Length: 398
Image: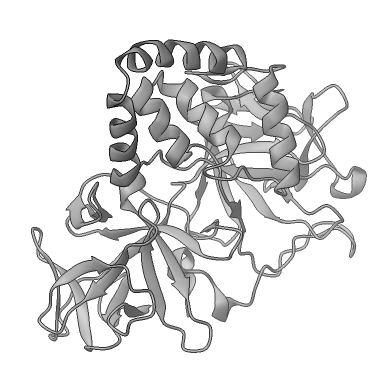
């Protein structure tokens, strides 16, 4: 699974949401229903960690995204477990490029022991022949691509691309780095696997052939991303009717938002609290799921996503604008879509209310070198100096 190294998965606080992965064994470190450490093949919500950097020391605290009070900890005997002490010395980690292998070395600051995985057990050890880790963004490169100034998403059938007000499977795209040049990506439909492309006559197409797009932050007022056809040096845009095409960089002010798609998740505490509530009333346990699902479905939240023109679509747009392009994990829209997406019963519906982990929930920041688009007033911005590249951009560290 090749994940993006230059579209990090950041919360508004600046904390990164990432998978902690052992590439040699194809395993991820997770935090299970009880808040305990485990290792699995999954790329799901329990395997997502929040990396919190102390800017003064450069050290990291690593907390579970699902169980936000649980902190990754190392003991002096090599045990790796979770605590709820975010201020302790055992909970601090040093993350640097691995000196011998591709990947990162993760070291306990207090005990000078390296995080290691044998294929079965997770532990720390003194020996320098330790595990090289990959830190990958939690969105897995999956995005809705929305016009900043329009309530329109990039969408596609098997034959041609178009725009839509929906946030369903057709509107999900995989934005993958080329691994050859910073800022260049392919954009592939999750629905049918075809790649977004451009033609010389400014027509936008989908095809089996890869085409490269250069993506970076715009410096124009309102922010957003510029998406540029690398081959033709022309920007992706849309007209007032939502029709897609390319044009010269300075011809319009259309920019795009990358709305990250995060995995679903729910904590054990949320599960048991709602199981307890459900036991209180047999009548509610039977009647409530149908009542909730009826209302949620009528609002436009369904298994395929949020229906265009529905109350849910309006709520989604309003929340996205208020949040600067993202949808807050745990917010109203994410919660209702969690319920509508899987047809949850009482316990499940309540879990969704507690978790609210669906789509979005963050702002994604592209890390680009000094590539310019168009005039001095409209170009790709340098997000931050190379020495401050985020964790999931570790492949670019010097």
